[in-house]
Amino acid sequence: MNSLLNPQTPFDSSAHDDFLEQMLSTLGPSSCSSWADETPTAPPSAGNSDNNVVFSYDDSSNLASKFRSHQISAGAAASKSSPTASAAAAAAMMLQHQLMMSRGGSSSSGNGAPMGLSLGSNGDFNDVGDGSSFKSPNPGGGDGGSSVQALFNGFTGSLSPNQPQHFHHPQGGALQAQNYGAQAAAMTQPPANGSAGASAAQPRPRVRARRGQATDPHSIAERLRRERIAERMKALQELVPNANKTDKASMLDEIIDYVKFLQLQVKVLSMSRLGGAGAVAPLVTESSEGGGDCIQTSANGGTRGGRSGNQTASSNDSMTVTEHQVAKLMEEDMGSAMQYLQGKGLCLMPISLATAISTATCHPRNPLMNGNSNNNHPVITSNGGEGPSSPSMSALTDY
Amino acid sequence: MNSRSLLLSPNPNSLKSRFTKGLLRALSRINKHRQQPRSSREIRKRHRLIKAAAYGSMASSVGNRRAWSRALLWKIRNQTRRGYAATRNIGSSTRQLSMKKRICDLQKGNNSKNRVEVGGLGQVDKLRRLVPGGQVMHTCSLLEETAHYMKCLATQVKVMTRIVEVYNIP
Image (cartoon, rainbow over all chains, first blue to last red):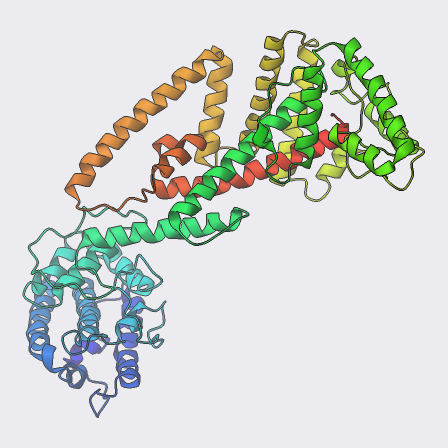
């Protein structure tokens, strides 16, 4: 047994030597230490040999021993093919063995052994999370098992494609072999590809699924997919302003409404870009959905222009009418005048600012105003004007 | 008031500045072309041009990195090439494509048991219709594209409002 632990496996120096040695060394001591940390029922001598730890779990001890024999035979068989393959197979068996041990407590305690997490942690075998929730062994889904997957990527890189079959083969009778098979299947596929169709094709004994663990590659792929969708939904939630976070369906509704709203804004802005040339098409009434000050003013301006019937003459008339109206209102009460103006989508501002803006606007390099200078309603629709403080200005100028 | 520098000064390579440049260029081109439109039909046509310019410059500033921008660019290029009626045809053809894809997916789905869909109440379909190129995407990539598309739409709106403010169009 110890020979499997020793890194002096009979293979020449290949590229994977160091990697395998490292892995085997981490497997040995770290596994034992983690087990010693987490389970008080660990063998009294938390020795370095696997045997003690193997037989600490009564349920799976028989299986473990059976499995060991399978492993050794498999290892021996594999040694003929390639030395690296045997070492890799041995290491893989070690891993699988660890996994088996981790799940050895399945029938004993419902909570499962926390060492499953030792392999599930990212690249640090000593790091074992709390045993509260037994994470699924599927490495592709959560943060668990990426280290395991890295190991297996290393393996499958060096091995021929039929090696995974070799791994699966000796586990045919093992109780936990199915989990391993599912995991290996999920791991040999790139996790981004959530397709469930590529599991190892062999009959596996049906096992009652434990909480949080799937025995079926289909459901593993399902969970992958669901997790990815949940991630994306969370990211979307942060983008949308009113994030209720209650429910996926309502969140989708929010998202759809927000996208529609943004598209509507773009449409309205592109319409208003043409200047006051009248017939801005019937802008939708629900344009006032917040952030819509500009939209509202443009909508008002547009509809006002539209109502005036596309005639510059009549709009000029309406301008003077408006001017008179505002002047009359200003005599009475500034506030009502301002409200009247705002209702029309106008505001007051100091003449200096108006002239400044107009010179900037009528600058020859401005390409947008050239075609529009005839029909422009040059009322300034920015609502940040000086309104109530200085009544002696007028912005209703015609250019 | 140097409006262009105001818009671009923070970061000359960001999405916003690229979009602004493209949009302004397209708008100047549009205004150079057309005379002042009198009839409502011309006005509507100009609306569409401007809207296409906005979306087109947004898509080209994103480039080919995103599926929705690729779909949008493709649509606009075909639209300009074959006239406006082409967009309707393209829309229907993508719908046919998506139907075929759905059928294939359904058949696959029947083999693998209980594939849990996001479902909702046909909301995912609505989203597909909204996001350009969303008809032929899987659900999770659709969500990713939606996030990026929303961000770009918000940028678009910001830039366009700023332009309207600056050039003082009512």
